[in-house]
Amino acid sequence: MANTVLASNRKAFHNYEILERLEAGIVLSGHEVKSARNSNISIIDSIVSFKKGEAFLEAAYVAPYTQMSSHVLSYDAKRSRKLLLHKTEALKFSAKVKEKGLTAIPLEVYLSKNGKIKVLIALARGKNTFDKKEALKKKDIARELQKQGFSAKV
Image (cartoon, rainbow, N blue to C red):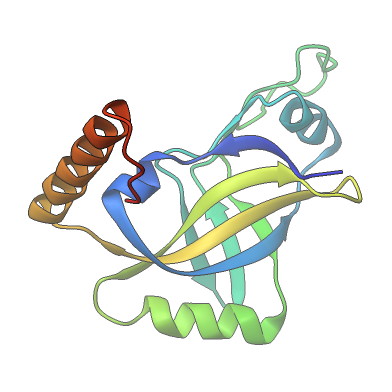
């Protein structure tokens, strides 16, 4: 049984150069888990921040569960959510984020084989506009070669 992708940040591959990846668990409340399992989650424009040796997912949107009881009136869909990492992994990533030009971003939210919701985070460096244009040109050339019957790797 493969991992089921609930949300992905495809924009990240265009805007960032991915250097290192790491899997983390995420702390969600009950209705957020139900909403996430229905793929009502978005990680576009969200980042991972580090505070006191712990990692937090900032600005990720988890839609309110449609059948949620009305007593939860003050639900914040973009609240900060704690990521579950080993202390050494969190400290290693936070030290690298403090370096110039590096950031931690979520790439995917998925359902693991054992039914847990996991987040794939990455250490990334922002691309320049020149790099982005160059990558688009390579993809266009590869697409044209593939149309003509040649195999091309990007």
